[in-house]
Length: 204
Image (cartoon, rainbow, N blue to C red; front, top):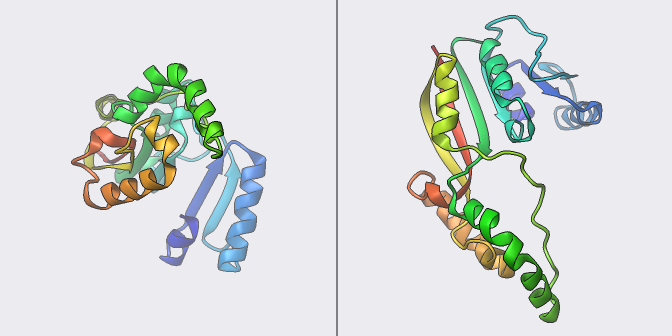
């Protein structure tokens, strides 16, 4: 993301709570762009950003809110540092996705059985990935953003799981093919199959 914005002439600021991730970002941006001009990376807490009110034209939050305990405080701070008329883009796990529901309710029942079957078939057993601490109903996210004077301008759903858990774990290649087809043609119409939700808002 940083190389794209920098190459388009924007001044890019990246914030992460981890010093290691900040160091990695600085190293990678130098390798890609051969310079750190127009980019800045620093360690920081999203709930206490060291920027004045209305500082940014665009603020993007990816892979963040679902891991926080005080999510509303983070959203409030994100809105604070965005100027009026500016854009905020937030990506979060989609709570109403049917695959997410299947994972929540059926995973404890089928997990051991699927692992046993995969071993009998001689196939590798896939893990379920990094566990989310929170999933968002699209309406709940919109409601919090509206509370802090933001209006939705666009929305998209991604990571379509047409073949629900545990089928997608048993046949991962076929599930991936179906997923890619769905994401190309149905980013909104198949929202209940989406694992993730991207909400774009304007600060009023």
